[in-house]
Image (cartoon, rainbow, N blue to C red):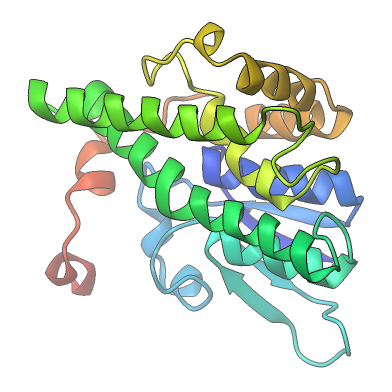
Length: 233
C-alpha cells in the first residue's frame, strides 16, 4: 500500500496518473495547501520542502521499513523503478524519457506556475511579469510541439513518466493564455492522454478531494507569503 499525500494540483495529478495506470494500491491523504496543512510537523517529516505530493511506500522493493519520497519527479521515477513500468530499460530510451521528465520539472512546471501566479493570483498585475511568463510558456509549448512531431508520446511510441509529468501542466492551457490550435502535435497528444481511462479516473479522484479553488484571498498569504523565518514560527 502507498500513502499519497496529495492535493489536486498539476503536481498532485502526476502521481495519481501513474498510480491509476499501474494499478497500484494507494490511499489518498489530503493535504489542503490552502489552509497550511503542508506545514504540519508530521508532513514535514516526509516532505521537508513543505510541498506536496509526497508518498510513503509501505511495501518497498526488498522489504524493510517504509520509504518516503517527496518531489513529484522523484516520485514518478521511484514508482517507475518499483513497477518496471513507464520508463524504458534500454539506455537510450531511458535517457530520453529522463531528459524530458527533467525538462518538465525545471522548465514547463516552474514557468507555467509563474504564468499562473502573475496572471491569475498576484494582487498587483505587473504587465512585464505577465508578458514574460506567458511568452516563456508559449516557447515551451513550441518545444513540446516540435518534440511530438511524428511521435505518439514524448519518449516515442510508448506512454511514459515524461508524459505523466507534462500533461497536467497543459490542462490549464487557457489560463496560461495558450491556444492548443497553435500547437497541432501537442493538441493531438493532449487529447489522446485525456481520453485514457486512468486519466479520467485520476481527475475524478481529484474532484472528489476538492473542487474549491486552492488560491483565494484567505489562502494567498499561506501559499505565497512564506519565508524561512515564518516557517520556523
